Length: 259
Image (cartoon, rainbow, N blue to C red; front, side, top):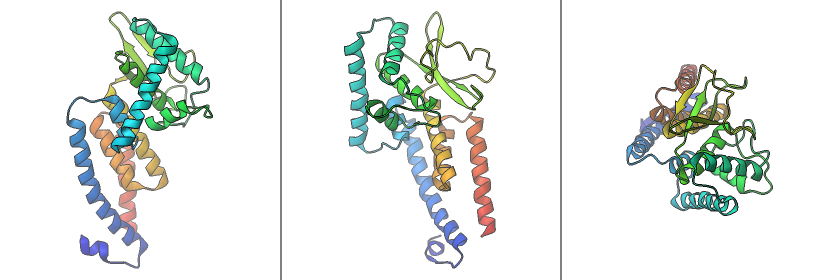
């Protein structure tokens, strides 16, 4: 393997495949370490979403945790929410939309750090797409002691896959459509046959899946594969990720045969 990597073939495809073989070996080690880290302890949405977003240095991670803490304190100071979980969740939702009335953007930010920065940036109008807004909102809910999950839809609004927030109380289920300013207690998806309830792991898995798609589109196939694998590890039942991984492996196989 090492001899092949050092050999400078005149064929650029062979050099690319040899380099990819080395990258795959490194990727296998990195993936094993990441899987082991995910298995340990309680799964923390806030931390894992930031790690998935590429915030791996301790100082940067703490910086974004502080930013979320600041937003939580700002909300409590300005709104002084009641102790009722549903009313607090509604107040937070309304406050976020007042802060950024044009917060949703199709194909916008989905990485949590970018969503946080966009919300805090006074010059930024949009904050994120459905995934980014849902992860952000759920993180703030959990900080206030409100347990929140997500609802995944294979197709919504005629534009494809979609996620939103789900709060389950003893008496009712509250669906929060984060892309709509009047989306609290949204009833528009009740008849959607593709509805699937997601927890924190599945939500973070979708960040890795989206990252894999971005790398795939840029032609960075090893990075795409890495993110697909972590996504599947977190959510092995998501058929779309398995399909995208199959398409990726097929392309890599064709590249090897062309070499």
